[in-house]
Amino acid sequence: MFTKNDAASQGRLPKIYNPLVCVLLTLLFTPMFGGFLQGLNWRELGDDEMAARSMGWVRWSFYTFAAYTFAEPFIRDTLFGRYLMIALFLGFWFSWTFSIGLKQVQFVREFVGERRIPQRFGRPIMIGAFGWVAYCAVALTLVLFLHITGIDPLPADAPILQQ
Image (cartoon, one colour):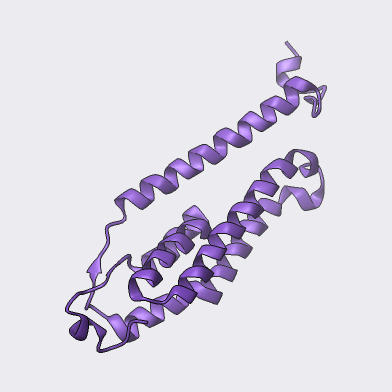
């Protein structure tokens, strides 16, 4: 694990993403995004246990949002279903941020400081944006499939049926 004297003793600076920016961008891109970037940071800092915990958030966020995507068409008319995505999104963000996300912010402030090479966020932001586009494509394809097959027919008062 990286400590105060490691930068001088190893003769190299860790190349990591700014953990505070990771936390803030996670609000836009889900804990999959921040967990993955912070997992890479923990590996670079030599803490494989925290890296594994971060990657666990990536995995469980993916499973949860995938399950929601397939369940949503069947629960959307319930009071609970209308707000479930927002609740999941904010719940995961708060849980991830306060359980593991801010730990890296504090660790980097205490032990690394400015003795690091900052990673650029261009590629991760583009991948995160692609992830949202892919998610929307899968969700819309699923809804279209359900409507076409009649599993989840359009309501009788849908504007497309009124023509």
